[in-house]
Image (tube, rainbow, N blue to C red; front, side, top):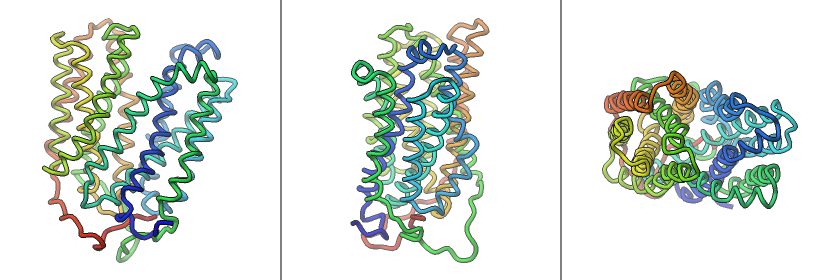
Amino acid sequence: MVPADDLADRRWLVLASAVVSFFAVGATFFAVPPLVPQLVDGFGLDHLLIGILMGSIAVPAVGLAIPLGSAVDRWPARATANAGLLLMAAGGTTFALASGFPALLAGRLVFGAGGLLLNLLLARLVTTAFAGRELSLAMGVFNSVYPASMIVMFTLHPILLRIAGWRGELLALAALAVVALPLSNLALPASRRAGRTPVPGHRSRGRLTPALVGLAAAWALFFGVYAAVFTFAPEWAGGDAGALRTVALIAWAALVLAPLVGAAIDRVGRPARWLAAALALLALVLAAMALGVIDPAAAMIVVGAATAAALTATYSLPARLAPAANLGFAFGVITACSNLATLAGPAATGAIRDSGASWRTPWATLAVAALAGAVIAAWIREPRPAAPLPPGGERSGISG
């Protein structure tokens, strides 16, 4: 067994475990959108209920991300990861065996709670394990898992549906969370004190600093815009199977570019400037979409590039803006804001479309929102980063 008191020396094992566990989150999340026809036919759901079902996964994050983020700063890492994975398995199983809408909704909510707990813990673990060394590269790899899971599920869905039916497909994905347990237990420390740097005096509590508030606001604006683009771009691009493949270019671009952007941020620093640039790029491509001067495929590739930079830069920033003892709290704040924006962005964009507006109006509105996010991100002031620690050097640990 790997020693439990040095996350830094086994940081790549921690990252591998995070990748496997986070893939289980993304695979189940992205398995549901292709199942909409089966859910409509099998349960008689209308589009409002489908929308509620799809958005419900973000509900736990809106209310629980901040308290759970603070909790993962203190809870044992191994037990917390086990709880998150088992909640995901339970939620996925409930959804797969559901006999009606209430059970479908309950399954999504339970899965969302488990995925939230795991996401907060993994972000904190990777940040701590890579503190001072290759952090942005690690975050690029970590965040590339999400688009990778989308690509895998959109590719395998027809095969899994034909072989096992939609219930069998969801049960197999629920089993993925269980499969992730052994590597998670190998990589993560069991003791609450493992790798932890003592903090003098009473227990540290997270607090909102101006820089963290700015990051949360910029991240919320990005995610609200991104969710709206992902929701409505297929219709804008033609509404057929080819349009879905076109919009999938967002995921392909993010998958390829996120690790590369991470390595670049590690080399040149200033992740807040990278976030500002990503939001400015997003505003620019949305303006081009509003004016009708860009091809849909090119637009989705640019959106994917902006996504890769925004994801990697944002997840690199909490380590610079919050003390090591409060990383979970910091990730909880930005996660709560991004999930609230995930609910609001597509709804507001849909309302604009329902009013009879052409595509120019929603795309232009989203461009303004992205530009506002860029201005906020450019305002974030980062403290000078700490020098990389030598092997075996003292490091702030995690409440393992």
